[in-house]
Length: 443
Image 1 (cartoon, rainbow, N blue to C red):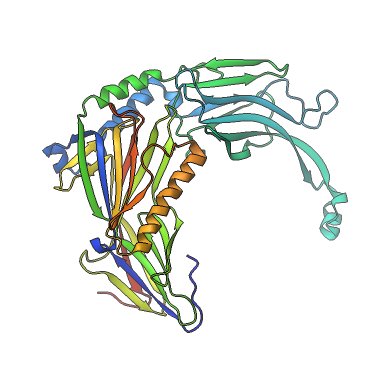
Image 2: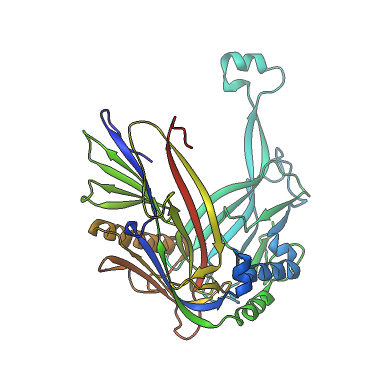
C-alpha cells in the first residue's frame, strides 16, 4: 500500500471483526436446498452437485473439459528464411467463438489463432569477441522464425474490447507439428463451455465453418446435452428465498502523520479502500471480490467471494501502534463453495449454475459515516461499469445502487420475472489476521 509516512510520524494497525465495522447482507431468491442433518454433521464444504456436473462433463466430453484445442501447423508453410516463394509475414489459421445459433444474443468473444514470421538476432560463430568488445549490431545476424500467436477480443453491444494482442502460444514452430491451446485457461477469462463455431481459414482465401464443433480437427461434437443434465440436477432444488448476514471484518492501517493529512488504508471484502482525515472522503483503490458479467444467453452473472476478516477475539479489535515493524500473519480458516446460511443459521445449497436464481440483493451496512456510504455506492457503480465494458453487462439488470439510511443496496434482477435467469457463483471464506510487533516473544 502506498502509505504516506513522513519523518516524525507513526501509525496504527488494527484487525477487527465486530459488526460495527461493516456488515454484508445477501437476499437471494432462487434454487436453494436445505442441507440434511447428515450433511451438516459431516462438515461438507462444497455443494456435491458441482462435482456431479463436472464428472458428467468429463465423461461426455473429455476433450472439452481438458479444454485442449489442437492446432496443426500447415505442411505448406514456407521455411522461415525462404522469401522466394512466399513472402507472407502472417497467416491466420482459424478463429473460434460461441455458437450464436444456439445462443442468439451475439458473440461474447472471439479468439483468433495465426502464425507470424518474426525476426530474431544472434551472434554467429567467430563474431563473439568483436561483439562483446564493441556491442555493435554489425556483428549480429538476422534470422526468421514462425511463432504461433493468438489474439483475444471480447465483444459487447457497443464496442470491441481487446484483451490481449499477439500472445505467443509457441515459438519457432515447424510445418507438420501440432500444438495445443487451452481456451479455458483462467488467464483468458472466457469461462468457455461449448457449443462453438470454428472458422478455419485456408491459404487460397476460402473459409470452412463448423457450427457446434469445439475441436477444429478431430470433430469432437459440442456439449449441448450438458445443459439437459444441468436442468435435471437443478430440478431437485425448490424455489426459495433466504436472507444471510455477517460481519465483513476489517484490517486497517492508520497513519498518525504530524506533517501530512492523516490517512487510513483498510482491507475489506477483498478490496482496498482509502479514507482521508476521517471526514474528507473515502475511495476504493482495489475493487472487492464481487464481479459481474453477461452470459451468452444475455443474462446477468455474478460471482461473490464473501470474505470475513477475523481478529483473535471476535469482541475486541487487535491493535498494534507505534513506529516499530509489525509482523502480519494471515491464515484461511474456512472455505465453503455453493453453501450459504440464513439468519437463523440454517444452511442451504445453492444450485449449480447457470441461471440458478431470480434475483440477488447485496446490502452493505453498519458503515458509520456518510463518506463510507458514498464509497460503497461508488464501488458498486465501478463494478457495473467495468462489467459493462469488458463483457456487455447490462446496467438495467436491476436498479442503480443507492443509499438507504445507513445502508448501500445493490440488486440484480434477470430479464424474466417468472423463472431463474441470474447466475450466482457463491464462495464464503474466513481469514484470520494476527498482528505481532517484531521482536515480541509470545506465550
